[in-house]
Length: 579
Ligand SMILES: [Zn+2]
Image (tube, rainbow, N blue to C red; front, top):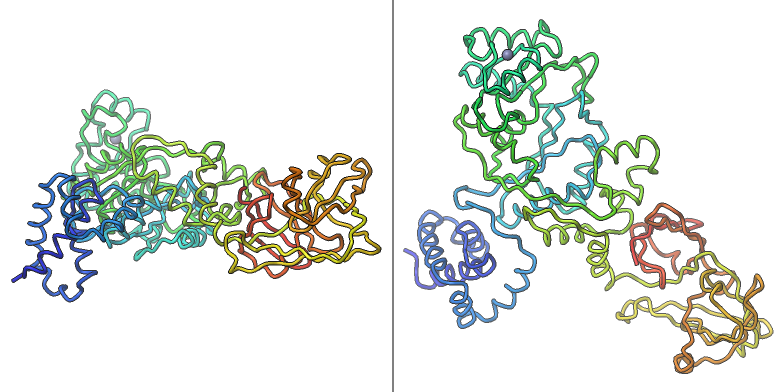
């Protein structure tokens, strides 16, 4: 028997779950949470399930207001935490309690590097699997060696990107390994009359099907189709001469749904497969292989773009023939990024033709390029979770992405000086050796500071300042060298800017409204190149302390922006992230 205390725990979890999902608690997450909190209850799941179901039903009868009130009165401390969770959780998945556990999948074609355009599918599927303590699975769809030909490097690159994004999957399949399984189901469907081998010319077939008429092949005896199938496999039929079609409703309003093609012949000599060579000549078409695998991989929730809505309609016919139940399908709207190139074909073409420096060209929104620029995986996850699985189309801007990234980076990124396009500034009348103590982080003194020492020779010292700053200086103007002293410009026209020491006080600079500029003692620093987001290169000198940085460190060059360190040897190379 379940006791009163246990009942109360379930009620609390159910109420909190309801608050997270606009008043509707879900059985599966409530059970999951209960077992996380009280693992000793695991052996009693059978006994507990009906009670949990009952409590969830009771909680769901209450209004959101009533639920809130109960939690406020009984467990006020829990509410604080819930609020934080609410900000970051996704809307509930439908019909979760119908399944033992939630299984989602991401199914890319390994014909391109992954990019932001895939982020929604990846993050939503992985995040939902994690939320429901279910499984996320990976399927590489490489069954079109003719038009959507995969390439070997992407088979390795895709898992690297997914791991970087923080995804965890417990099953990984490659469709080109599964031809025997597809053949088995093709035969099964041919034998049961769910599919047939059509040898009509495609224009002829299209004409008939547009007029809601069956082609002459459709109603031939099963034995004839099985013979034809053998001819497809053994080479009697050549490419284009026969196709396996799924039987659907010929009166379906969408002609593209009617008797869709499931498998076809591809000349293995002309189009060898990058992984399995010319081993196979009959290849499944998208809806056949994807539809079968979703069921065979145990996928319970398909989360994908709404351009797949018709595919669901097509595949449901096959599921019916096989006596299977179609998984829950969630179709989200299109996601664009302003000024960002998310078209796979254009990216592939640009990389091939050399319009981009490679897959990691900073102008691309590939994950490898974003990673190189110091965009954090957490940024991408947060961005996608904010967008969620809405059906409306969304257009994001790079600024959305940068704002999240900046928020994540800012608390820990060290500050350094980087003088871009350096120009010399000669300051006279400096009374003594001076040292600037600059914090590595303005809000985090624990990170320590860096020192820049200026040792004047007969009162004179040379500095590097940026050409951009130098161009704005005017004779008689006072500027403050950040953290060091105030100086008055004597001559800004010549190649070397001449100035004289004025005072040390920051207060005085403030009173005079003197601009603050960053600088380096001439003769110090490490040559530095920053690859900008438009693939141009900013050249200059970074302060000596940067020599201790490591590749992948993300730092902020003051008055310039956040950069990710790519390499450090005699010079430093970095990639620009954003302001
Ligand atoms: Zn036909």
